[in-house]
Image 1 (tube, rainbow, N blue to C red):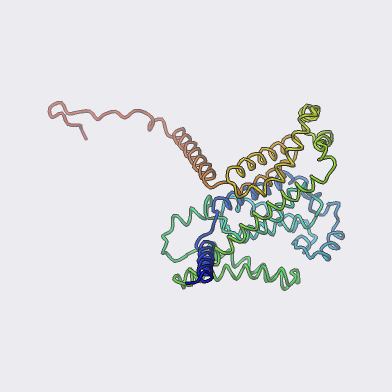
Image 2 (image 1 turned 45 degrees about the vertical axis):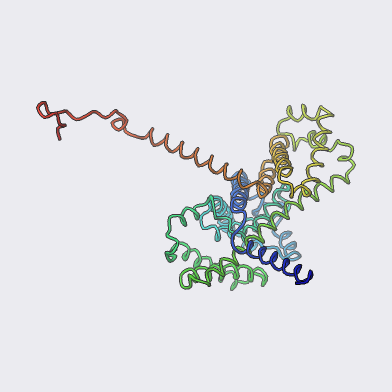
Length: 407
């Protein structure tokens, strides 16, 4: 065999192995689960905190009026259901459903459906008032779309618990899923007939709706090879979505780092000084004054931020260095949450960073959490036991002659 033929064979084998790897299983189940939980929790906490101010942020009292929103949406064709009606009741329903979808996605209940509803809630509110946010909203906006592509409920979800309790070969009997699919299909049809959906968004939503129906039918009617093929396609889409999330995070840090390099305030090491002396970013004035009063500390943090962000994309293939930088970035975002008063931006970035966390560490965190939960439940059960059950058992009185217990 010639050298060229040998090289071609090696390339074919490498391609075959790569295709088998991305279709045989959904990679990063723990990483996608923690991204799902992190972003759903971040958006849920944001909606709950801003509940008293929801009308000023995204509702009829928003400074970004309905007319301005309509003009912008005509230009960018962004999606939001809040433009379908100017009724206060309709806004309250959309806001409430966004809260419920975030909670359900965080818990992993009906993850495929809830990931779509979560995306709709995020897009509807954020596209209604595009200038309401602190930077973390952009990350939530993007990841909410990417999560729809992933199988993010494989672990740490109510869906995973339900699958574990079901026999592998049992036909699907999912009355709740069929009911959800029917209700959402009716809503999708109504929105189409009323002319609320552009052809692009209609194609996306109908595609997702029909894909769910095909998956259910294949599981119930053709559990053999057709199911295997659909499962491989789902794995391929999941792995592509996971790769997109990872690339997006890399782009965020790479662009942020390189733009900082070009700024004079970052070059002379004084960039951190200015936000520490702005009232808007000083929830703890004493802490900000102490930190901002040290020129050496300001310079170290400023240069350290730039170095970490610029270096991170180049360390992804070195596990040890990558993990060290991940820890530094998580500490940095936690510090931003406390010192600058940007908790939701920091939570969103920490959730995005989690996609690069090692599986062993995530499994350890999961095991530690489960152990803590079991201990807590055990304590509550013991505290709730009646006093009679807690009393030590006494042996039954024995018959004097035979020595056997009396019954």
